[in-house]
Image (cartoon, rainbow, N blue to C red):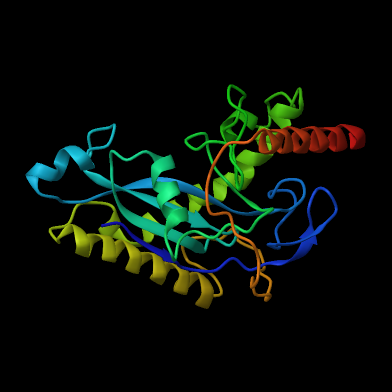
Length: 262
């Protein structure tokens, strides 16, 4: 059975929604956390290889043929894991795992008016901001010799990629730090899921207690001390025209501001 845990509650401060109303949002670098600063983190799924009974292998087999669990990982800008859900079979779709995380009693918490940065493996839905499809996106596409963004969709994707890249680095740190996550073990699947959770907790302890993480020399961010009590949370995921319009308006606003100061 999948095991999920709220590992590190998102630290928030008072900020402003696009309509000017007050909202609690995480302190972030505006260059990386798009536009209004309402991005509270990034999330993605990752495969971790496991050993299961022969009869269970078809359910745990990924598209690449590995036997693994599909682990949902969410993090903040400081590369601390805010939520982790382990145990879903490798054949499970990312969107299905995310839906389960939101429906759990101690599941993923997304305050209303904020969002996580996600890739296009997820739908662009309330609380989960994805890039525009069919538009260049990955950081390697925006090298020094690349053309500057030609329209607001390209500009949005460029900064979305910079923001979402933190989850890629966080997952990389987690797997680099703990070799047990890089290959199969001979423990039961229940124990293996607990090992994944323990590694995540220890990762957060290291990030919190060490002044300099020996595996990462590029971090210089701060967190707020406010608590996120008494806030409305997103409990379901569903597409809406309002959220699509929000993304498009945000992209247009960002691009126009950038073009005006060039």
